[in-house]
Every structure is written in C-alpha cells, then in structure tokens.
Amino acid sequence: MAFLEIDQVVKDFGGGAVAVAGVSLAIERGEIFALLGSSGCGKTTLLRMLAGFETPTGGRILLDGQDLAALPPHLRPINMMFQSYALFPHLTVRDNIAFGLKREGRPRAEVAERVEAMLELVQLKPYAGRKPHQLSGGQQQRVALARSLAKRPSLLLLDEPLGALDKKLREETQIELARIIREVGVTCVMVTHDQEEAMTLASRIAVMSEGRLLQVGAPREIYEMPATRFVADFIGNVNLMEGTLEVDEPDHIVVGCADVKHRVGHGISGSCGQPVAIALRPEKIQLTRAAPADTQFNAARVRVQERAYFGAYTVYHLRLASGARLKVSLANTERHGEAPLAIGDEAWAHWSDLAQIVLTQ
Image 1: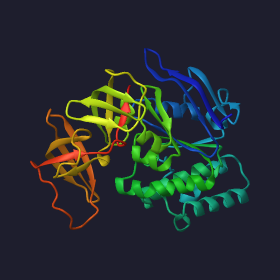
Image 2: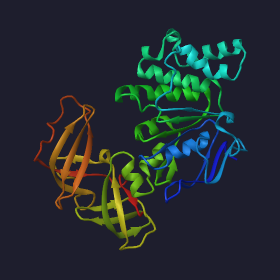
Image 3: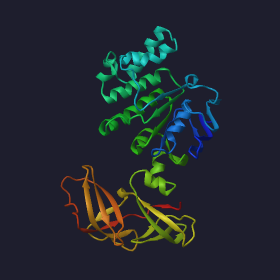
Image 4: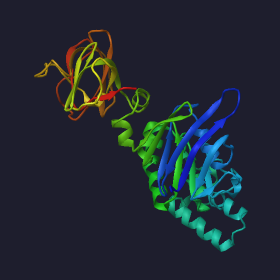
C-alpha cells in the first residue's frame, strides 16, 4: 500500500459544482508530488480535503493505512503551508517556528532543540530575533516552511509555496526548497499552477483539469510524452498541427497536415485516415536560411513574423503557407554567430523524425 492513498475521492458542492470528480492517486513515502493545473481545476480543493478543511462527498483518503475521514484537521499528522505564509507579525522568527510546538505543550528543552535545528536547516540563525516585516519574501517563505516542519508532520502540504515571490526570487528559491524538503525526508504534496515550479520541485506531477486527472508521471515524461492535446498545450510551449494518418508502419508513420508531411520514427497502431494531432516543441525545430537535404518530410518554408530575444534563447514566430503560425526557440550559443533572421525574412523550419509527439485524443 502507498503511504498516501487517495481512492475515488469526490467533492460535490451541489448545484452541479463538482470540484473533484473521482480522483485516485498513490503517493509513496518521501515523495514530492505536485498537483498542477489552471485555476478552478480542483487541485486546491483536493489539498484542503487532505488537510481536513473540506470533507469529501465520496471516496477515501488513507495515510499510512489510516483512514483520515474521522480525524479533524488538528489531529491529523499533517501540516499545511499557505501561499500567504500566515506568519504572526508580532512574533520573532524563533517564536513563529516554536508556536505550534508550544501549543502542543512540548517540554521547553525539546522546543528549543527543534527550533534551533529548523533555523539551521533553513539557514536563518542570524535572523532568529527579527520580526517577519524585517525579512525578505524568500526569508519569510523559509520561516513558514520551518514552522511547518518543526512538528515533524508525516505529510507536508504546500499551497502555491512560491506564489508570493517575484520571478527571479522564485527561481532562486525553488532549488533551495526542494533541498530542504528532501533533507528532512517528509512526504510532500504541493499545489501549483506554475509548470516550471512543478517540474523543478516534484518527483512526479499530476495534471488536473475540471476535477479530473489527465496524466500522472515524472516531469520529463509529462513534457516529452503528453497523453492528450490539453496536457501537451498546458505544459510548456508547443506547436499543435491537426492532420490525418496516411501511413502506419511498425517503424514509422506519415501524417499529412496543411503545410507539411510529418514522418515520425515509430508506429502508433492506428488506422489510415484517422485524425491525429502532431505536437512539436519549439526547441526541437531547426531554422536555417538554406533548405535541408530532404524537404519532402518534416520541413516547411516559413516567413519570420515576429522575433523576441531573451538572452539565452531567441523565439521566432513564423508564418506558414496556409497562414498558420509556428513558434521556434533557438539557443544563443555563440556571441558572434551568423546574423539572426530578421522580420520578413524567408527560411526553412525542419526537424528530426523523433521530435514529434503523436496525439490521438
């Protein structure tokens, strides 16, 4: 049995508002698991049911074999860290971390020992006497995490843990947060709408939409092998091209789309004439002034419509013959390379036969 087992959990608020529709998950001990989806997909409702703030309409939630249904929030071996951090403004960092332990009536020596260990873990010893308003956003986030971990919960729940930080600080904090959680060894379920955050922190991700799970897998699996059009479009950037399966052999297929014939280096056990979609990530595409050696498959004549320089890479928005758009992301590996394509230039976009993802749903 998994450490955390969510079995056919439903949350129906009535009036046709089903927030969670029969979700089942098995999460192993020590795992960092992310629930990823857009606003209103049901991920936060599911997290609140784990915490005990919402009661499931149906299904079971088992933690280490124990059914949590009858346990109120304060008796569950679970701590939840909120997006706002909810630090007490009148207490110091040390007292914020100690608050939950003191409420439990722990001996003074034990409280002091655990607080010092948490301060060491989150590297905030020099700031132990400060109040929350005297800390940066990243430091406040670490205080909230230390307070959540001080009680040694069996399960840690994170609700948009880095949502209150600006982009640069969020990126800097992601690796540090993952390090702290793994060092403690606590099982963690986090909710986020930020794909990069989920892929950086989590060992596995569940993509949710309209109360249901669409795909569960490791970050690389979700990105490189999305199961549906929704997952492919939601995770990262992607070019989606609708087409028809023209050839399906064990070692390759051919899909005809409006602007290009795709040759993909594997079979799909489909049937000729069936509609499929080709998903092609922008970074898998090459963009050259000269035509590739073979223009019959996996190549298209394009015109540059927009160009955006991001330092490490440049994104090109291209127009195909049918009027469709194609996005290409090229790494800037040289300081003084070939002059970049300008708006209005014609070029060739081309890719290998292992770059595409074939989607049938």
